[in-house]
Amino acid sequence: PGDADYPAELAVGYLDGITLPFKQNNFTICFSSMDYAQNVSYDFKLEAYDNDWSHSASDGSATYRNVRPGKYTFLVHISGREEEEGNRIRFNIKIKYPPLASPAAFVIYLLLFLAGISAIFLIFHRISKLKARAEMEKSLSEYKATFFTNVSHEFRTPLTLIVSSLDDIRAKYSDSIANDRSFKVMEKGAGRLRTLVEQLLEIKKFNEEKQI
Image (cartoon, rainbow, N blue to C red; front, side):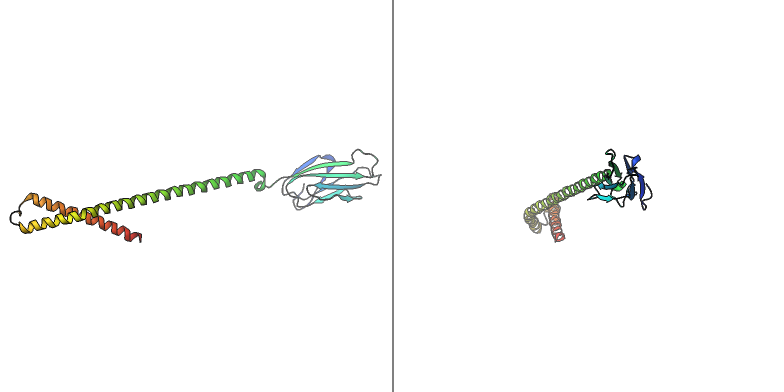
């Protein structure tokens, strides 16, 4: 074999076949009956490349260019000889695939593709789980907020009545309860509860405005 830009010359009488690198896919095959006294002709064909047989009356050579990687069989039929033996020639030619286009490379590409699909599937599955978890946590937070808001509303009215009653008692009996420790504890506790209820309602209102 020669350079990829120039056909290689091979004497088929000394070879059963040859393997060429993918860059050396231009070549010439020379063949002869070795019987120059007789008027012979040749029919030849490169299987898997030529569609039809080619005929040569004298010149025993065939040139092929840009042959794709793969396995081929070069066939020669010699006509015009008296001897039958050696009138048919078979010559095997194999052109290697480029490293990046070989069957092994395609297997690697397939494995990488399947690995990529699996990675994408796992990523989407993970994202779906995170979204579901976030939705669940959001729903739980909303439920908690709603629960505390409802409880706050339930406490608000009784606390308002209690605080109002304590204010009325203080107004009517200010002299007698001015230094009453128990009354002060009740008044202080009711005030703290009312403040907590108001804060819970404000948080609920803030969250609703934020969602809008």
